[in-house]
Length: 29
Image (cartoon, rainbow, N blue to C red; front, side, top):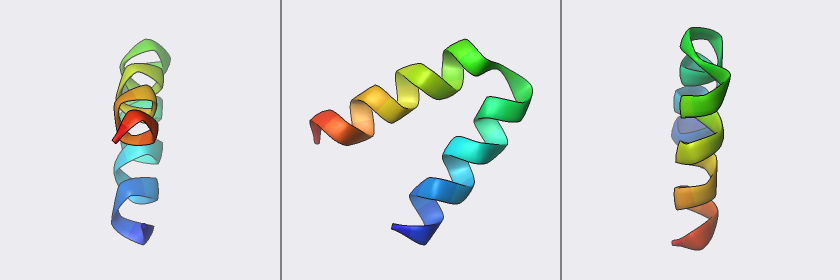
């Protein structure tokens, strides 16, 4: 879980849209 959070945070910094998409995918899984 910590790794996923870190990845989401890192992506959010680069692109909110990308971070949201990744978050949705992780939640779906």
